[in-house]
Length: 496
Image (cartoon, rainbow, N blue to C red; front, side, top):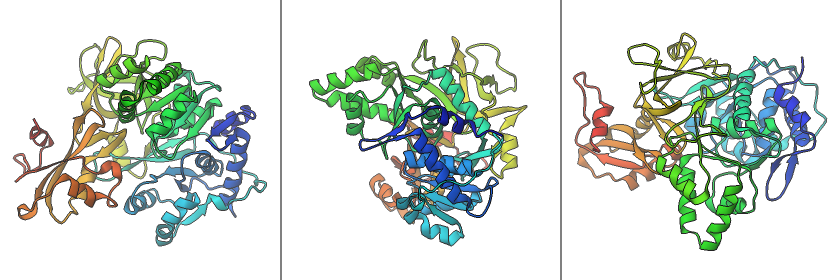
C-alpha cells in the first residue's frame, strides 16, 4: 500500500520551502524527515499506534506540522488541543478522547506534564527527538480515522468530531480546486491550530499544494502589516475580527504607510474571511481601502467547508456563496419538506465525502445530527439569486465570536462557579468587531454589585480567553417560560 496522499504530495514538491520565518526556512524534505523521526520516537516498541489518540500541543509552525504528520505516519489519531486552554479544559479533551499520549514541544510539555502524570499519560517532547534514521513506518489506509477536533455544541461540553484521512483529503482538494491553490502561493498562518480554519483551509491546503507558510504564534497587527508591505504573501485568510483590526490600523496610519500597505494588499490574488459572519460594512470598507473583495465562505468542524463565494466571479456581501466542488447542499423547511425554490428559508444540510464520520463515543448525538445521510448543520439560510445567505442558528446556545464557535451552556456552567452569581444566561449579541459578543445576564446574590471588569478579571485562568464575557447585565430575575425554563429569546429582548 502506498503512503498517505499528503506524504506522497510532499515528496513531489522537491526542495521547495514549506515553512519560512524571519530567521529560517524549512523545506518539504526536511518536513518529511522530521516527521519520520518523530513517528519513530512515538512507536518505540510497537509497529503501529493502531488509532491510539495522541493529543497535539505544539506551537504553530514547522514543528507542529511535523508532529501532526508523525502521529498520522505512526498510525495514530491526532487530537489538537488549544494552547491557551485551562488545565480543566485540557483534562476534558484528554479524558473524553481517551488519549494515551501527548505530543508537545518543550515549552508546552512543561505546562502539561503534571496533568499527564495525574492521568497516567505518556508525554513525548519533540524537542528531545533526535534526527536519527527513522525506522520502518506502518502502511496507513486512507479510510482510517485521522483526527478528532473538539467543537462546542448545544450541550455543555464539547464533542469530538472524528474524520478519516480520506475525509481530510476531500476537504483539502475541494478548496485547492475552488481557490486555485498553487506551489507559488505564500500565506501567513496566525490562526489557532485546534480549529479547522487553520488546520485545513490554510496549513492543509498550503502543504498539499507545495506552497509556503509563514507561521506566527499569534496575530499582531503591526507585524502582519509589515510583512504585507514586504510583499510576502499571495493569499491571506482571517476571521472578521482581524479584518476590523486591520481596517482600524490602516485608517490611523500615516499617508505614506497606508499607501504602501494598500498597494501591497492590492497585489494579493485572494483574501478570504470565515469562521464568523462578515458584516457587509466590513466587506465594503475593506474594498474601499484595498480594492480587494473579501471572499466569504461557510463551513463547520463537522463538514469542512461547504459553501463559498466564487474565486472567479461575484463575491456578494452578506452571502456565503454556492456549494464547493464535491459538496451537496440542500435546505430543509421547518415543516420537513426540502426547499426547492429561492427566497424560502430552511436548515442547511450537507452531504459529501468530506463530511465527518461520527462524534467520538456519542452514537446518539451522531444519529440525531444526520437525516437520511445529510448532516444537519443547525444553521438557517435562504437561497437568493444562486447564493446562500445565512440567517442564524436554529439553536440560540451557539455563539460565534472572533472566529470561534462557543457553547453558551458551557460558559454559563463556568460563571455559576462565581460566588456572587446565583443564576445566569449567556447569549451572543451582534457586534461589529467580534461578530457576536459573549454577553452574560446574571442574577447576583444578596444584591451585591458586580461589574464587567470585575467579572472578566475573575474569569481569567478559569476559562479560555475567548469565552470570557464581553458584556454584562445584572437583573433581579431571569425570564422563564411556564415550565420554569429560562428562555433565551426573552433574555435577548432585555437588550432591545
